[in-house]
Picture 1 (cartoon, rainbow, N blue to C red):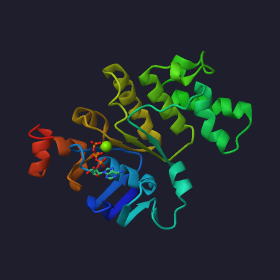
Picture 2 (picture 1 turned 30 degrees about the vertical axis):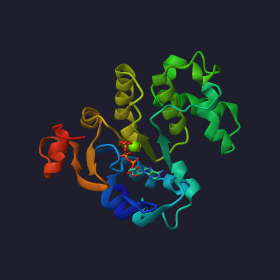
Picture 3 (picture 1 turned 90 degrees about the vertical axis):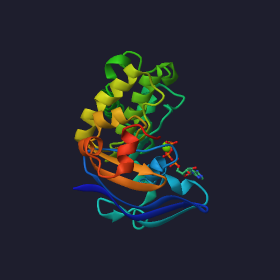
Picture 4 (picture 1 turned 60 degrees about the vertical axis):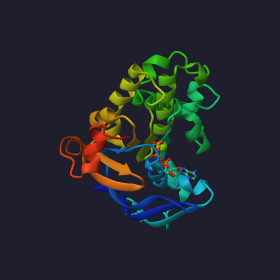
Length: 249
Ligand SMILES: Nc1ncnc2c1ncn2[C@@H]1O[C@H](COP(=O)(O)OP(=O)(O)OP(=O)(O)O)[C@@H](O)[C@H]1O
Ligand SMILES: [Mg+2]
């Protein structure tokens, strides 16, 4: 079963064609990694999945992207789409409020007022992001008091609290030290049970450790995609081979 099906997708920033005829399926409740050198279009493709590119002036898209069978550039309500596809960015970006309020924010905005209900949502999300034990005694202190790695897990908790179907992550560990990175990688194991995860990463080692499927991009083209093991051990395309063996990029 696939969460996303991308068919003949082209994306232009003005005259610059940043994605060229992409055809890719993203399976349900698996981790898919996008890899490739800087500027190859990984973030751009990630953003087409929840229409974040709509916010950039001059963007033009041809082709089709469906989520659970519905055309996300057609019939789907963009606000709902973004709620179903949570996003985690490279730099942790907690809101300037308490840990608790960060996680409760989205549900409150949706009209949930009951304190018991919010408490339960906050605890569940913080547990889901493997942060609960570290913050349970300081829930009402500012989120900015957390370390970078904790802030990133808080952002994951904030995303989970909205009960999305999909989590899109753009280099979520590139600003973190190895220990904080490992905590996030360990977390992926439980996230994949509940969510479809798409992660952009510059670390091939990370893609190998956490991704079920890997897609390799070069200059706006999808060169190859498949089972992570296959991509890293028996790539079919010599450009993939060149990249994973470190000849370029
Ligand atoms: N907002 C934008 N406006 C114009 N061009 C853009 C914009 N964002 C990206 N591009 C261009 O689109 C191409 C793909 O960029 P993108 O950011 O998707 O690459 P990437 O693979 O995520 O790179 P990196 O690994 O450096 O993050 C690049 O040529 C880039 O310059
Ligand atoms: Mg990028």
